[in-house]
Image (cartoon, rainbow, N blue to C red; front, top):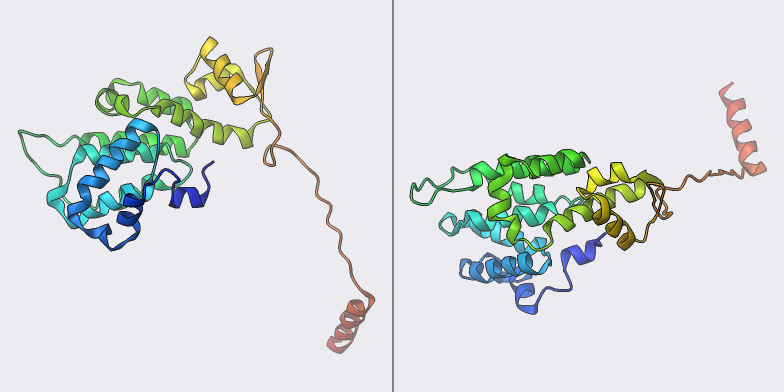
Length: 241
């Protein structure tokens, strides 16, 4: 999982972007094009920089004329892959409740896709992974797949990493049939994926390597009470009587 420091300042962030995100130019609308280009670099390279993307949404909030729905959708798609961090909710909080632009020549795709993206996020949050894939593969999400996630390099694998982050602390062993529904993989693809994780596989069961969260360990609590402490208790009891 990404550390908090890496989340706040990714190692892939350039000095130029660092200055835009952390300096006084953060709210300069003239820089929105640079930040948007950086977002599309993230889409193509599997990199991710939440604070830079939030800076775009903040500029849209202050300058409604800069609003670009395709950029907003791509920001939300990248935020989906960051779960369990609350990036998606942070992005949603900056969208406001202002009315969407109504241009018949250029219809805004965000109003129709936002409920789908929100539902996908909620399903991830609830660890309802088979339901997530069912919605994502459904006709309802066809526009999202065909126009957006298809351009986001490694999107599905990033979601699978989210799944693995949830499975690793919760299971010591998990059946491949169940795991296949979580990862939306089957047969050889699932076997290859399990091997890449370094998990062992035997008789249709994958063994999750031991980690602090999936191991049951007894805890012995030992208290040391000094005689002087007991004498104080007895003295207080006598006074109370």
